[in-house]
Amino acid sequence: MDPIETTVAAVRDVGPDAVAIDLDTPPAFDAEPGQFVKLTATVGGKDESRFYTVSSPDTDDTFEFTISYDPEEGGAFSEYLLNLEAGDTVTITGPFGDDYYEGEHRAIVLAGGPGIGPAVAIAERALAEGNEAAIVYRDDTPLHEERLSNIANAGASVFVLSEDESLTDAVADVLTNADGEQVFVYGFADFLKDATAAIEAAGGDADAAKAENFG
Image (cartoon, one colour):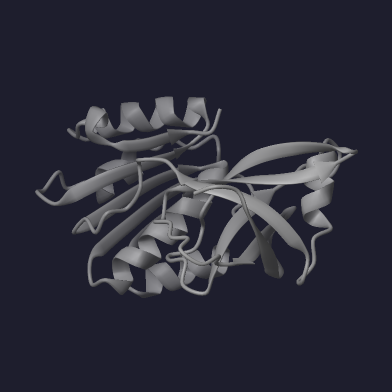
């Protein structure tokens, strides 16, 4: 999709130093949980862009992305996003990415840090479609805790780990290696390395995982 201007519908706190931004869905725009968009804005007199993963289960009417920030080290682009209000306009391009939910019977999402956005989106979508879901999430300051609780109450397995905890036992608990099961991995490079090791330790095929490296 070519760059298109759309409107901010809402901005909500979703945890320590984190917000979710809802955008009105432009005509003909459609994205699946796990895909991402490019957000462009004029900051300090020049255009700057960042990529954000969709964190809503669908893009009907509105869609969401989640931003975590460091209040001491955040840059001008972060400040711009944090000051957005309902009614403001932004420019998006996309969606991008091939590693997204496609109706798999059982979705296992391993998420580190900002990977929580696609994790809750995929799990909610899977459950809404009558499929199974599980989340293993590692972060010292968990986000979207209410959504994680609702996902667990809906019957999914949800593990929230601190950053010094191993993924091995939790991944072994949720991974069945049955037909129709798909593993998704979202996070920074060190998390992907740990997730790969945990999948292999549980007898899974890490190469078959759908994964996005956030840097």
